[in-house]
Each structure stands twice: as structure tokens, then as C-alpha cells.
Length: 179
Image (tube, rainbow, N blue to C red; front, side, top):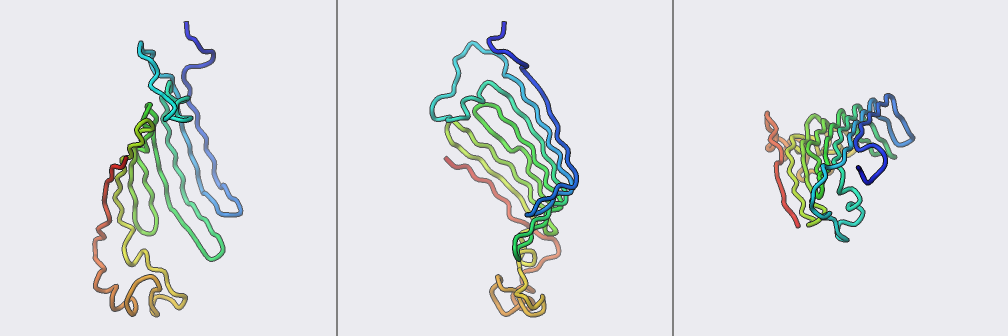
């Protein structure tokens, strides 16, 4: 007989369209998730004080998936537009993982993943992107592209930038393990 009351698993889904607030808007949002208790074992719980509040989640498996489309945020003169953000993740004690993070923005893409072990604090991270190019990072200095770019060294777009543009954008890639 189970030693707890209530369901041992469940799923949920939230869908919203045309969400807006004073700071921005989202064209479409979809969030799905599932929760299940882990199969019983004869072992003792692994969680200790180092897990902090994560210890309460030890007996559960969790999976989630989130999609956002047409995200626009604006604050004073700053603007942020994101065409698409997809992310998915899971919890399998003691690890929390973002298994897939995909963003389409600024004429490029970002794909990333990360895992953190809450017991050891080990973090693994990897990403690949093609939107970090000088052309995509450059911000016009107010006078338009013909007058130069304030955050790129040199005398303007025709000198320095012309030497670093490429027809097929390579992007930064990397992975990191930290403790």
C-alpha cells in the first residue's frame, strides 16, 4: 500500500495566444509537463542538506517542454525580438537538465543544453550558434549603417567589417564542465 495519498503521476498543458503586458508580447505560448513518482527502491533517499529544497523533488520524475513564438520586448530605447524559443528538460534526481534549448533570433539560431547535478553542483553546458557575427552584433550609432557602428572598432562598416564578413556564418561552439 502506498505511503502517500493522491496521484502518483500526472500531465498538464497550457496554451496561450496573443499574450501582452506593458514590457512586451508573446504571439503564442505552449507549456507541457509530466510528473511521476520514481519506482520504489529498497535504498535510502540520497538527498541531504546540500540538496536544499531540491531534496523534496527526489522521489519524482519530471519532464517539460515549452514553445514560445513571436516574442517582442521593449524597454525605453532597447528592443528585443525573438522569432521562436523551444526548450525541453527533465528532472531525474539528482540531475536537472535542459535537454534542448533552441532560439531563432537575429537572422540566426542558438542551440544549447545543460545539466546540473544538485548534489555535487557539477554543471555541464554546451551550445552552438550562428547569430553572433559582427554584422548581427553591430548596433547603428544613430546615423544609420553608412555612418558606422558604435560597438565595432575601426572607422565604419566598410573598413573593419568588410574584412570579417563571410558568406556562410560560422558560429561559436563550446562546452564546459564546472564544479
